Image (cartoon, rainbow, N blue to C red; front, top):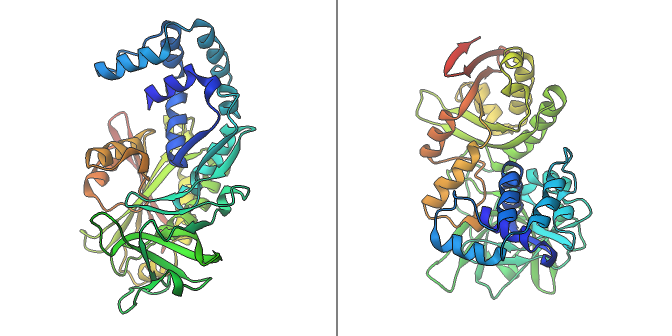
Length: 398
């Protein structure tokens, strides 16, 4: 990604559009730009990539693209990036770009405000619906706001089946799939595909809602990811909805922005227990030792609003005592980037990577717990809160 940014800056006058499959990928690129802009300007000035780029073939290719030292270009970008306010910085770095195109719906919705802030005058357009397995649908009306994107299904991309989905049911057992011609507007379905290569009746795990038709092809909106375990007590939709309220409280009470989040249902203890991992952006009171110890009231309010938004199934099981007190983990900046590395090492394509919202991999959970600097145990039944602060490798509990 560093090399892509470097080459994109070198030929910034040729860039007429900024694209990515998902908005999360663009947000990662902006975060890298925020942390490495001085290095990028240095590399442009001297016409050679950083020594951190050790692969000889990549280095030689980048040197060829840079076409020698570019001191004037480096100074221009340096003056832009030195500004404290990065609002609209993408339109300043790439002045000939006309649009940004990426998927911003579903679990990508949380990143939309950040990309809109940095886009400035650039139009943000909704992308097309591509899965790793096949192309699902395209956005025919890019004039619509990206958060309202509807995808027109491509009937020749694969053989599509639709498994009826009811968000209030604990299981889809007994349901039968229907094909493209039998779906009904207003209903939700899980997508099932048979592709031209290998996959037969494969469940994509995506829940979509049919919102209309283009000729005879269904138009769908992405809703959420399907539960992978029958009777899962918390859906991705429940989590995203609760985290929206959580972010508002965090912003209003602690002047802190949330970078990313995920949860894990721990079934190994005596009773099930939900672990919620949240990465906060710098600057934050939670990253300042003196203020962190005084933030107990803010954490209590954050935890309370989280549990209130977790959906009826979670609340019912929590009331029965079948689910234990929630654990909130605040993790260090950059922790969620490590999940990307784990995914790539496991064979996931970087361009199709979507940050998981419901974690099912214990390796990722271990990674998050190691990166934790605040752990909060919140029991809503008696409004009790226990907080553990991990500061300078020491722990203090309250």
